[in-house]
Image (cartoon, rainbow, N blue to C red):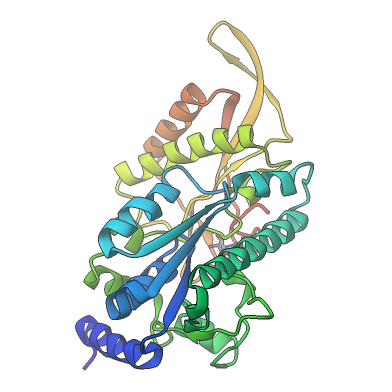
Length: 326
Ligand code: XMP
């Protein structure tokens, strides 16, 4: 019979058997799947696991801290944080095209992660060959989608952990392969992960980099982070987190509009709210959020975020619009 306790116990036994006395690496993205996979493996093999978190500087407010503090506190996992903000921003400088941005972010991500892996292997010294396993938060729908392959298979690019370096052969540990998303959340809860991690809404791997229409700069990211934090805060306060699938907040950095604020005329940027409801992100409808909540978000963003003088609501379903703007 299926209970989360049974799943956890069964997987712990399987992980121990697979990994033995060797060591494993797990890339954390901040998302539910990698967090639960890591927590499960940590429970099974403890200090034989090291997690790697690449901070690309494109996360929302508080997300990196959530991994660094809350996740570590809840699991006791060994964590290597790579601060790569400058590297990503340098690589993204002058780039406005969405596909270009995605390619650059994906490429840099793989490079930084590979470098971290190589460092971990080097740090293990003569025992470097013991670092033989890579933990992946692959879910059942991912397995079905990719044709059910197993073993040292290539990692799907949407996992944002990239391919493996040529000279290191890892075997994959995929303890969530038989689970659906809601089951993964239950397992995460059982493992004592904080609610904010377990109930997290989807967030794209390229992060806020694809929510700035125009060039990505530190200033613009900070601005968007502020607006996004306000929107999330008000949606949570209104109790709407479970009603919406996700709500991208987008900065139209290449667009300016006239406003009147305080003593006079402003020439600022619009922020777009894109709340959607969905079952699987393949199709989506725009969420009919209560007007009071929208009003509160709009007032706060225009009052609190410098350079933003307009908040607009995206009322497009998917199709024809995608959920993200880029
Ligand atoms: P779209 O914009 O294609 O998004 O309607 C569908 C869902 O996928 C998320 N998304 C991504 N997730 N890496 C990810 O991990 C990506 O590059 C990526 N692009 C979009 C998006 O947030 C939505 O949930």
